[in-house]
Image (cartoon, rainbow, N blue to C red; front, side, top):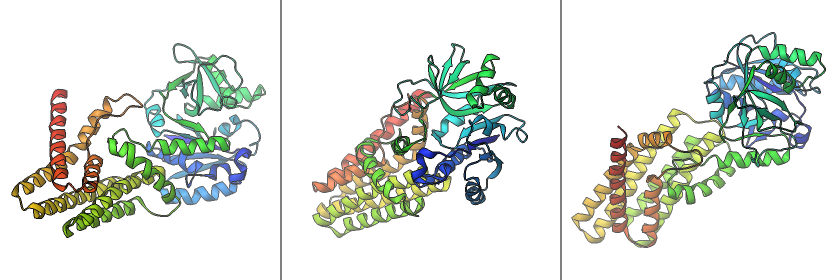
Length: 440
C-alpha cells in the first residue's frame, strides 16, 4: 500500500531547532524519518512526500535516506504551502488512484496503531480516521488539536479545531480511498482548503468512520512543549511488559539514562550487546580467583552488565535498528554469560568448602536457568495475548538471576546464591509448564 506524508509546512514554532521542521531531530532521528520508519515497520515501502517550504533541502536528505533504507519515495511540490493542509493532499491526486495511508510528518505514534488500522476493510468512497477517545489525554494540546464528533455507529459527524461538541481527537493517521481527493476539491471550491473540510463532506455522505487507537500513544510535535513531551513518551515506551521486577524497578531506569547518552554516539546495538557480554565474562573470571573482594567485584560487574544489556534493545528501538539477528545474537551472548557466571560461582563455592553437594546445586542452577530462557519466548507470547493494556505480568527471568548474584556477592553468600537461583528457576519452569498445560 502507498503512504502519503504531508511535509510542506514551515513549522515556525520549532524553527529554533532547524530551518526544516521535518528534519528536526527527535532523539537523534529526524521527525520525518521516524514517521517513515514507523510506516515501513508495518510493511509499507512505497512513499509519497508532499514538500513545500525548504523543499529542496528535504528532498536531498530523503534521497540519501531512501537509498540507505531501500525505500521508494516520490515527491510532490506544493507551492501553496502557506495555505491549509488539504492542498498538500490534493497535490498527490494524479498519482494515487488506490487506497492509501495518509500521515503527517510531525505526528509520532505507536507503530501498532498503523499496523491495526491496515487490517481494517475500507469500502469505495470511504476514509477511516484513527481517533483518540481519551479526552483527558494530558499529552494533547487542547487549543491546537483537531476535534472529532463521532456517533454511536463509529461515523464522523463533525470535525474541526473549533467545534464545541466532540468526543474524540484526530491523531492525523488516515486510511483513505481516492474519494478524499474529490471531497477536497469540492471543499476548496467552497473556500475551505483544510483537510478537515474534505472529511466533513465525506461525513455528510456517511463515508467517514473512525478507528479507536485504544490508549496507544501519539503526539503532534508542533512546538517546544510538545517536543519535550515526545521525548518523554519515547523513553517511557522503552519499558516492556515482559520486564521482570529487577529490570522494571532497577535496571530499566538506569539503562534508559545510559541510552540517552549513547543515542548521541554512533555505537550500534550489537556492539552494546558485545560490551555487556565482555562485562559478564570479566565478572565471571573474578569468581575463579577466589576471595571475597573478587567475589564482590564479579557481582558488581555482572549487575552492571545486566543494566547495559538493556541498552542494546533501547537503542535499537529508538533508532529503528531492530533485527532478527540482533535479538538472536543478544540471546546467544546472554546464555554464554549466564553459563560462565554460574559456573564461576559453582567453582568458587566448591573450593570454599569442597562439598560435592555444591556442584549439584550449581548444576541445578545452570540447567534451571537455561530451561528458563528456553521457555521465555513461548511464555511471553502466551501472556501478552491475555494482557490488559498498561499492565505487566509476573515473570522470573534473567534480571532476577543476575540481581540475586549481585545481592548474594554483597553479603558473601555464594552457596546461598546458587541454591536460591536453582530453586527459583526450576520452580518458575514448573509453573510455566502448568500454565501451558491449563491453556491447551
